[in-house]
Image 1 (cartoon, rainbow, N blue to C red):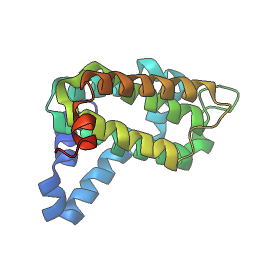
Image 2: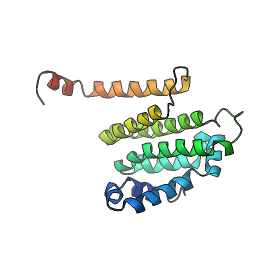
Image 3: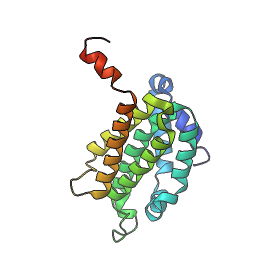
Image 4: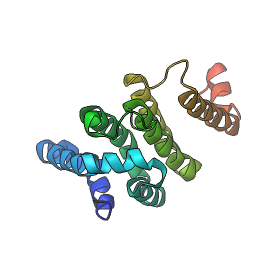
Length: 182
């Protein structure tokens, strides 16, 4: 699947195809998700999340391609989290610290954020839309808990990135709004 992932990502991110061929688009999207997040692939991710070929393929294709592919990251994270929940009993035993749903989803979130950081501000709006989509999934799936140091660290990095971005625009937008100009 990783050698065909770019074509699938392009298809999934194509909004006009999604609108005009809803049934076909959903079937192809679902099939790709099943291939990407089948039990064997989830086991490989659980055993070595940072060196998994899926993450390498995502980094290569999403980082070096058109900005619209960034929109697939929230979809992938939601699908990944769902697949891990469905198949958790088939994954390596819970004695492994990476085998639980929460840890695997946190790792996936971290990998997506690495991709967004690598792209940087080159893709501006799409990076931020993708980042917001990922954070929405973190919220929806309750991946952040007050005692979760790993997720807290990841979210601190995101706050720092947001602060740097806001400092980069030098408050021009906010000053214009405050003084009644658009």
